[in-house]
Length: 318
Image 1: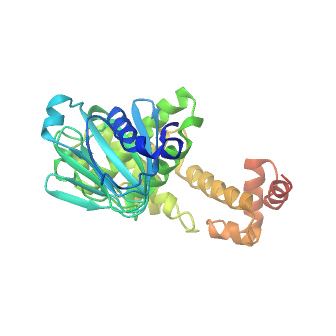
Image 2 (image 1 turned 180 degrees about the vertical axis):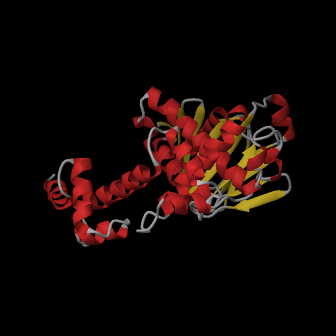
Image 3 (image 1 turned 90 degrees about the horizontal axis):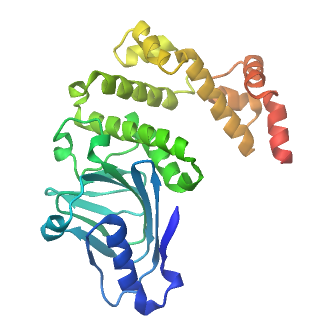
């Protein structure tokens, strides 16, 4: 992600004007409101994930940006914006509603209508710019959801937030072809989280409904990997579908439900083994739904070429 401005690189007298210019050049015509005497400290970065714009803002200086009717008349691209609070508590206001976001929450606002984004204290944000036609939602579906917080406590948002956070950090490492595919995953997750919030999933096209259902199932599985008895029947029952239909959904990903669960469990175990820590190998396996130590060891060796204990030692040596 390219650094567009780092205030520590500029003389104090130039910082306000430079920050205002970068905000308007990067995010579009906006009215920046800040105490003229306030010492401005912060950094703005920007990059792209295929058609999705990604920005990161860090500042410790209270200020706000406003999208006014006059600025909208001047330039109004058909965009939605999503702001994710990485640190601090930014405030988003639009359509008579406002959201005071906590860490890990996000809100969506419409760039074609007036809004306010304000920071009363130090914040770190990720801002995603989404062309309207990328979100698989009915016309007007977001009109009742702008400037309302969407939390990562459950559902697809629990899967979307860690991914959005990771994208904002790692965007410069993705190759163009990977970025294009990942942008589809990101927009599908956002659409699904929004549809869940609106409870309007049934009004979506069939293909979009199936993608969103599959993403919800992925999130359900991810949150319950520690259940040793997690199986296709449990997953199907939780989503009010038949086991047969569940298997059909996973055929589109060239895998099976059981294989997906096993893969995600092993990946969680591998990540924890790589981190070191004090848990034993058997404790790690049990934590992620593989309580039979011998079975866990066989599966791990088949997937990664060595038993889990050996993998931990090899990682420690590196």
